[in-house]
Amino acid sequence: MAEYDRELTPELTEKIVQYQEVTGTEDYNAARSQLENHAWNLEAAVQDHLALSDTSPPTPQASTSSQDDHEHHNWDAVNNRGLANGRNVDEERDSEERENLNRNSNRGGGFLSSLFRGGYYLLTLPLRLTLSSLTSLFFFVYRIVYPYPRRLTDPLGDVLSFIGEYEKEYGLQHPSFFRGSYSQALTHAKTELKFLLVYLHCGDHQDTPGFCRTTLSDNGVVEYINSNLIFWGCSVTTAEGYRVSQALRENAYPFLALIVLRDGRMTVVGRLEGPIPPEQLTSQLQILVRDNEAYLVVARAERQERELTAALRLQQDEDYQESLRADQEKERKRQQEREEVERKELEEKQKVEEQQRQKDNIRRLKIEMVDRIPAEPDEGSEGVVHIVVKLPQGTRLERRFRDSDSLSSLYYYIFCHPDSPDRFQVTTNFPRQVVPCEPTEAGPQPPTFKEFSLPRRSMLFVSDLDA
Image 1 (cartoon, helix red, strand yellow):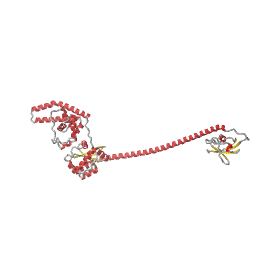
Image 2 (cartoon, rainbow, N blue to C red; image 1 turned 45 degrees about the horizontal axis):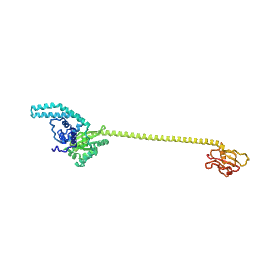
Image 3 (spheres, rainbow, N blue to C red; image 1 turned 135 degrees about the vertical axis):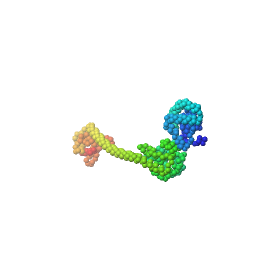
């Protein structure tokens, strides 16, 4: 009863739940009893339940420390081997039944009893083989449709919890544990190109306390591991430790594995199982490190070559980018220069066109404004003003106007002359005075000759405003 009431591990509890799911058994104690009768072999218990066999189940094996250390491996092996493993279990059960039959015969059950049991075994053998095959097929299909539920795990939490429990139990004198998950430890060792020493801790094993207090706390061991290796550890009772245990497949405790990067993969190059003195542990680690140091040397050389190649490629890329930027800058400047030349050419062209339009407009105005010049009065007529105009290039113009004519007549007369500038100003000689002869928006009607008080004979000068 004490064995029945002992606290179950999470792996055994999960097996009970899986057995209830497959067989439909609602009684928790009955499911546990069936699994214990089959040494916690889940598939064998399920097959026996579905086959409805009348034979006695195998006698539960005595619990030993070695069995406790490895009983959680059974179900993982079933998962990996799948349907094929079911036939191996059937063969083992048949072998056990034959052995039980032989033992019962040797105990003096009599010839008739042996004959009856042999006949019963032969008669039920086809049925049991058929049921076993159907059971294996059903279990295979069932697990495809309803896979095993995945438990939520916290690898980092498992490792930190183990480190805390280890230091609480054995003190702070130990190699420095890597505070991260197993995957993180592998990545760190691969990145740093160092050896990784993995320690799987089984607190229930009889050799564990002595190993932790004597070997792992030795100053020489601590100094060597801290100086040369990355040390990672975890308890096999945690999900993270159990997962690593399944990967490394240890056979005894205490267990140490030395892992190193070899041919691009993290590979186990050494396994130390069982209790070991401090001096021997240090010596064996030194031998393993020396024998496998060449892999790290090669890895470092390859990494250095890759880094050198990457740095060279990066420098080449930077030089190319710099040259590209210089070329782009030159092209940009050339483009700006071309655009500036084109802009100036366009402006010059527009300016020339504008000047030509103005000249054409002035030429047209000179033709149109001829009609605005009044007729020249006769010499000696009353109210006649005799005007002499000197153009900028020296041409002299003479004409008579009536004193009642507007000064605009003088402007039109000068403007329509072929040698006249396009924009000009008319002034008197002495005293110098501007003659307001050009019609403007402010003064569309310039004064008459009489109003401006020009003498009867006057000489006027024309200034080119565009000169």
